[in-house]
Length: 147
View: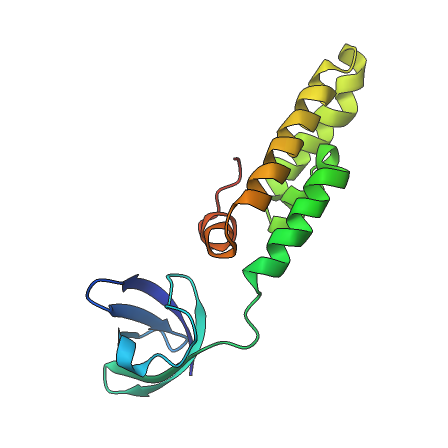
């Protein structure tokens, strides 16, 4: 069965999974088959045994945060003024704000466009300095659209 980890406590080494069937299942670290510690938001594949999850694997189709991180950073660097990195990460409203401000900013002597360019460059740096896990938790799972 497919599902998603809702929460995982590293101290108790237990968590909760939301299955695609709408039910919740208990996750124990002894059933985790992945190389890294499970994190909230991870998409998974598991077997249900009553209210417990068994043989829990990270979903092979899950988007890798590292690949999103590099692509988002490159979009922020080369096309950041147009909000391309925002669109790539799924933040369409923020992407439109950046795009419109950048394009219409030239009417006001380019000052708003320069500010948008600076914001995009700051986001480029932030994307690069975050670890892959932090990036994924902050921007992919956590849906934090700005900085």
